[in-house]
Length: 140
Image (cartoon, rainbow, N blue to C red; front, side):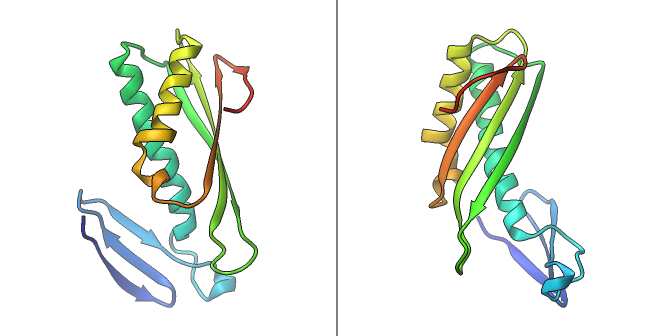
């Protein structure tokens, strides 16, 4: 995979993904930017969640299960010192529908432990928890 980014001004960059989608990134005004795009760290958290979400839907579909609703809440903790990398990421998966808990747990585990290339490209510890039809569960 190869991408190119263009510097637009100040701290702003834009690029086009190999699949043809435009990405805009910028720093906060306090950091010399113009706030014209997402922070790279915000995109990273979205990438982890999107990667695991795609995996989970794919796995559940292969199990012949169809969630009626699926969303994620993601929280990342960063180190205080530079490079201020993510040290821990917690993803809470909320699914609704006729979904056996053991199959949801299996899909989440397969994604986080085996398939999500984005998660495996980071050195942060990934913590997962889930709820099915609004019933909270403990973390995994």
